[in-house]
Amino acid sequence: MDILQRNGSYPLPEGASEILGVEFSGTISQFSANGSITKQFQIGDRVYGLVLGGAYAEYVVCREELLFKIPDSITYETAASIPEVWLTAVQVVKTVGQLKRCDKFMFHAGASGVGQAAIQIALGEGASKVFCTVGSDMKKEFISSQLLVKGRKQEDLMPINYHNEDFVSVINDVTSSKGVDLIVDPVGQCYFNKNLEALAPGGRLVNMGTMSGGIVENANIGMILYKRLRVEGTTLRARSLEYKVVLKAAFEQDVLPCIIANKYKHIIDKVFDWEDIVSAHDYMESNQSMGKVVVRVTENKQL
Image (tube, rainbow, N blue to C red):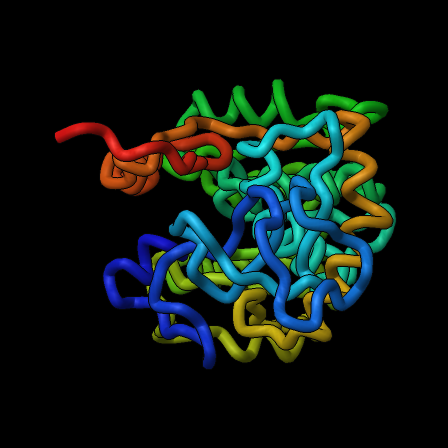
């Protein structure tokens, strides 16, 4: 999202700052003139939160309803990288995707931050099989070794290298051509028709991005009809405050305890000083990252 916005390809929701960034951590330095609205926070509290924009800054203004206190066991760097990823994952897997126990689940771009979160939530919620696509064998090994939730078997998690494996064929082989019940896709155009093929009758496709393009030529609408599929698009950033507050509550109740207990892993790939923001963006665009990339506010270096 940050790269798309930087390139002018991400339409900002109404009221959003033109400054990049939607998640942050830090300490509370000031309240509005009326003081704390919720009475849950004080000056000096360690917090993290979600904003419409403006997080690439020394100071950020955040709605108190979208603030979280940082648990003692979590660092500022980890906290800053939690809200967008995990709230989005809760949204696409549970709220919109309506994953049920024993469903078969698929996520494209499985090594991404949201992908890692969604995979673990699906396993934790009882999905019988979790598939994901990744861009290298190294990422396949990373998924298999790092994201298997305690109590699940290795065969419950199946990463697929899209460079040399066809995900539809793999799913058909594993499921005896029955397909998967839920696919979450941030890629878009190039996977749309193949997603329809991979879905079981009555399955759900949640599109949450258009990394490969947003226009699908020769879309197979007939398959949507005769397989009785549900296709839905969703984003988090443009949602209402009320919607995000409900998501926050679901995250705090069902998911955050699993992160604190290390049942779900929140993996930071690299931390950059903010003078090195260009290098951070270059790294994200290189498609090498396996986890979150964090930028840390530091004192300006002498030029």
